[in-house]
Image (cartoon, rainbow, N blue to C red; front, side, top):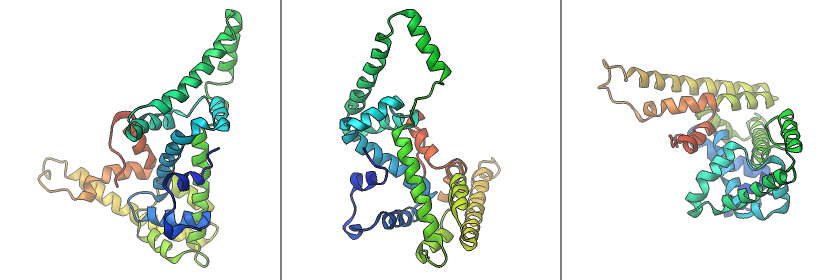
Length: 268
């Protein structure tokens, strides 16, 4: 079975400088790296974890008996992760053979269920039972479950690293000067902070980041007015509408939109 944290190490490897680090130390390294880039660091880490998970899944998941049983219980991946897989495999491998092979097997399982119920009365009863239990799968999508576990571990690492006494001063400084978390991760991180100073640091940093974003977005909107349309927009203003969507709804929604409609990815 592909374990949530191991997927990062197995998919991209651990640089020599990080070999021998404990999982919490690796989380700290990943957090610092994400904080050096635009947007919510936790969204970025989860987006990367999703990609790495799916890469390992394509390479190994369809040969893992326990994973296949999980996928039967969940009827494959959820719509979001299946869509990401459909987008990723042709880019990574040139075709959809891995995904097609997996879903060929799932389709055969679904056909077998119908074949076992050739009597129309029994089939009708089976469909009614499925409707009564809801349209969703029996078990959660394995990729969603891995992402949830990874998110919990990342939030725990952020809590520990923000502690004023036992935390990491460099990471605290990165949070203070960064672009902040998305709204959802801000709430989740705040609920885990047990020390008042850490919470104040997070809230103050968020307020400053959103004040800057609001200023850029207002300028972006203003410069679309015909009276001011000749004024050049700064790069920060050009990206402000995407940053606002990511800040309120989470950066991963922009990655999903790329798969769904060929839209913009989150700003890098």
